Amino acid sequence: MDAAEDFSLFVERNGHGPVVRVSGEIDIVTAPMLWECLDRLDGQAVTIDFSAVTYMDSSGVNLLVAAVKRAHDGGGVAPILRGVQPRQMRIFEVTRVAELLTFDGNGG
Image 1 (cartoon, rainbow, N blue to C red):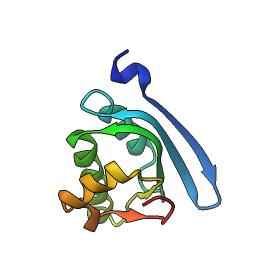
Image 2 (cartoon, rainbow, N blue to C red; image 1 turned 180 degrees about the horizontal axis):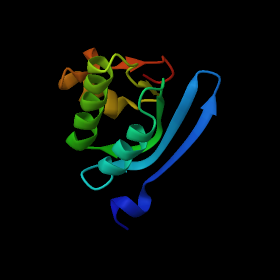
Image 3 (cartoon, rainbow, N blue to C red; image 1 turned 135 degrees about the horizontal axis):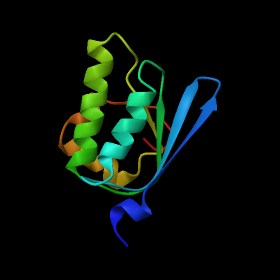
């Protein structure tokens, strides 16, 4: 099974805006799919739920940095990350990207 077959996105709405539930691996194959989803939601206060993310490489990190930059440059709201797993948080911390990201406190 390749990463794209194991990857899924589901967007739901809560009282604060869209929540993008990501499942599977965020890598060079799947990151463009997540970017396209975020692009459609541009300008909204988006929460990205990482609870079911099993793996993330630098493509995922780069995507999140680009999303934060786009939000700041456009006067929008940067995505909020929820359910970040310890391995993912470690990647964010080692790369110092954690300083740029906003976490909702549930697992992040």
